[in-house]
Length: 164
Image (cartoon, rainbow, N blue to C red):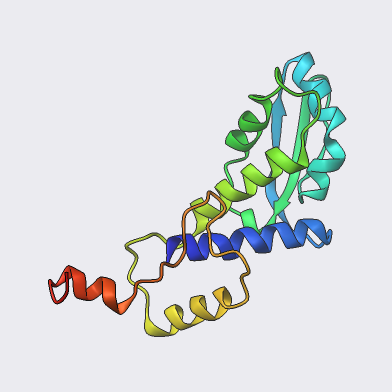
């Protein structure tokens, strides 16, 4: 259930981003990020990508940025951790790669927000999750773990020593 829900959330985040339909949630209090000059240039060069992701972010004085809204699907995001993760790659990249950083971020976010493996679900929630997965062409979570496994009757019989 975790891997399946993770796939559904990941696909939804990617689809919204690709269609530029990311719905944003204004922050009650803007979040101010203070960075060093190299980080400032890095973020400044990537403002458009961050905005496409659903972050309302602008320069806010010397070596600072102000975030006034976040993607609604990430309403409880830890903004500090998000930007620390992006800035941790600053020595390796001069530009945020939407193919790498964005995908990794969406995969990580989907994982954190997905139903947990041992959460008890009602029958209706199980049915709903299964209905969402019927439209999913990839039966792996974004990290590559399988969502479903096919077990044959013969395999089950072997487990119970019904056949050799």
